[in-house]
Amino acid sequence: MRLYALNQTLDDVRWGTLMPVAVQIKGQIVQIRARGTCSLAVTDTVPLAAQIPDLEDVAATLRPVFAVALTDLIGELSINASNLAQLTTITDQTRQLLLAKLEPALAAFGLQIKSLHIEAIESV
Image (tube, rainbow, N blue to C red):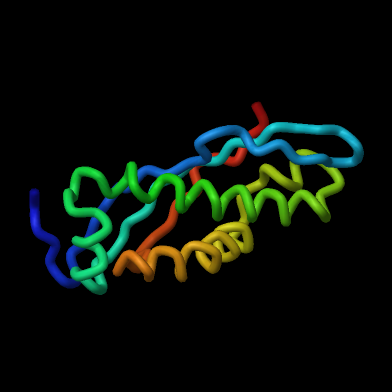
């Protein structure tokens, strides 16, 4: 077990949807997946060490947190999407919306997002 340090940066943490998210666009059901990477800063070592004792388990433990945020975001974006391209185009607004959904959940772990990269939002 490796200890965490305050302000430590966890780089290249990979995230993505665990399963495709089914959404309806103009009466058609499509399945969407998303993936990317992020860098996280340790802001509080106590909750982090309590919830993720081993540094090697950070990505695996946080993957469901990202999946829930992504599922919510894709569902919300699909409401106003008139075509698949509107849903799968990565914009700064998409990134900001995802950040807003993730920040409180990650703060509970004692983490803060330093950078967030969305590699793809695509249909399967």
